[in-house]
Amino acid sequence: MSFSKLGSAWPVSFQIQHLKMLLHSKLRLQLLGRCAQLVVNRHASTGSVDKEVMEQMEEGFKKLAESKSKSLLKKHLTKEIFEKLKAKTTPSFNSTLLHCISSGMCNHDSGVGLYAPDPEAYNVFADLFDPVIEEYHKCFKKTDKQPATAFGKGADFENLDPDGHFIVSTRVRCGRAVKGYPFNPCLTEADYLELESKICGAVSSLTGEYKGKYMPLTGMDKCLQEQLIDDHYLFKEGDRFLASAGASRFWPTGRGIFLNSAKNFLVWCNEEDHIRIISMEKGGDLGKVYDRMVGGVEALGKQLQFNRDERLGFLTFCPTNLGTSIRASVHIKLPNLMCDPDEMKKLADKYRLQIRGTSGEHSEAKGGVHDISNQRRMGLTEYEIIKEMHDGIKGLIEAECKARSA
Picture 1: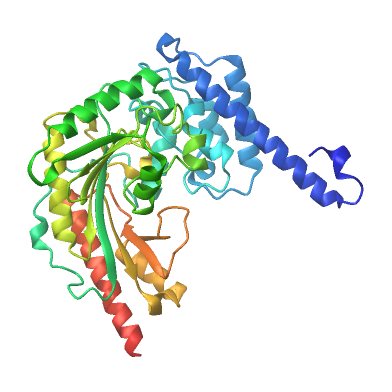
Picture 2: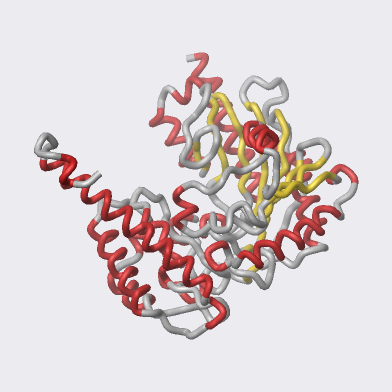
């Protein structure tokens, strides 16, 4: 709709807001287009940023700085840091600062707004990533080091809700990146297919309770796809935050899902990370679900070489998933606590938990069921993270029982 079609019937304030939206949409398309073009030329490794990319980066930075965004990107991408990093590129994949910040510049309502286009970006653009990592992961400083992998035994943790009064289901997942490849913004179509082939080969070798079938998204029956999504097995195409970061390119090429016969262990191929390894089942037996995931991770680790940094731990596309990359979650009903949002937030902060809607980040709660997970992924071992999650959910259930009897 143009201003000539709006006419004088519309208030000036509306026309100004509409113009801002049009300009912002135009900038978003420009940024996505430039990121796509950068991928085509990534192997050139010129070590320089071309003039057009620089201009659009500077325009996006100016709009972000003038916005009311509360993202960690805006907070930590100061003018000084921007000037220091804007001309840098990663040595192997020629990634630029634009690759890292495009999502946050396109979506001012982002919580973080920062992604790594390749593993080297965490070092090349450390002046931006390090303070974001420290704030999100609660004081994981640039001098800190992720502990060595230590899974421990899930059998140490009791079933949190054996009678099924509160917990609907439990899920534990982790992300992995395959060594030698960049992340989504810098993957070519051929890269996606090559990764899928390697991952498909690895999951097809699984035996015992892990034995199952790999199903590529390309050519998948639409009814089957919708059913898998509705049953919370399959991912959807990336939301606007991921799309703006370059995670939906060449969709659905190279994407797929592996599902075991019991449908309680699955592997996502090239969704947000190269691999998402997921264990899930109804009820609240966190330890059992965790042990199943660990077994799958260890089996796949014998077939694939995962990318792990000595300081940051397992490297992932989003810096919120670094370290162990583990996210343990429950779908849980806490009707009395949810009626008191302030108390719920206080408890979540106390136990270092994150509360989301039923379908995950950026979604609403359905039927009073919330998704509650561990917030910390760095600075602790895998076992310590599961223990922290277990203690937190136990504390919430106790608080719900107390609120119910009050």
